[in-house]
Amino acid sequence: QVQLVESGGGLVQAGGSLRLSCAASGLTFSSYAMGWFRQAPGKEREFVAAISRRSIGSPYYADSVKGRFTISRDNAKTTVYLQMNSLKPEDTAVFYCAAVRSGGLPQGPNEYEYWGQGTQVTVSS
Image 1: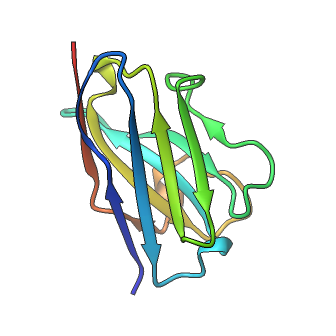
Image 2: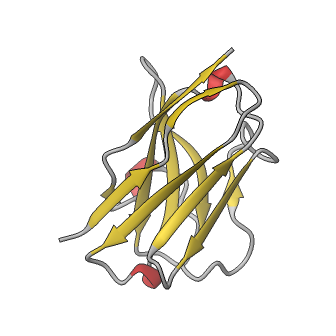
């Protein structure tokens, strides 16, 4: 049974930082591309960042987070991370990690096979 468990969310002031983690189990982690998505109240789930299964090539980021967020992974720990710096109130959302057995960098939510339960990030102004 595949499980993705996010952690690290919380309340932070604008300009602050948070590091999200997503621990994966029940899958051959190094065979899966990993992505982070977010969903704000009343909005659709949107792509944030993706990293290839063996970190080959550069990760891909949404324009809204480029230069502020960094995605990384540790295949030995079967964990993917999202370092978020210079947070803004508009970053407030539930953040989800997702996995897909792919050699690429999928950006569409429908392309991902497995999802975590999400972690809340709230940025106050």
